[in-house]
Image (cartoon, rainbow, N blue to C red; front, side, top):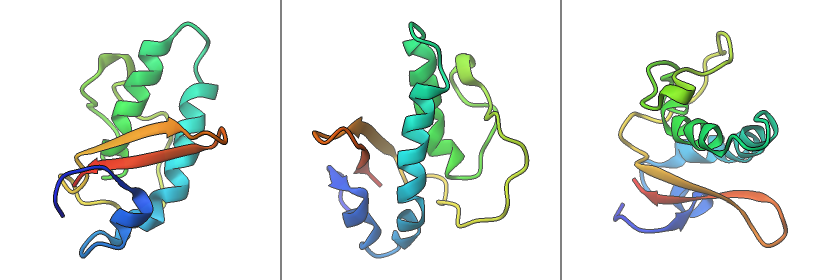
Length: 108
């Protein structure tokens, strides 16, 4: 897939990217979690949590590059369809005009 902005739904329909569809709901849940699990005034911690998400979906839960959030808080996870490391380069997470969490895949 060429680099560029596409919705997660669009990206999941591209060859070799169907695993993204299994993470669309999780992306929205994580976006809400970043904001609701962090006290006001700690925007840099929210950003650190957001940056860890691409590693989280690739089943990497420790040694995150930002020391503010160096590892995921969860315990052991059940096996699931993980996104292959390097497949997702960057997700742009945001709230849309209807105040719903959403994400755009910037490149794969």
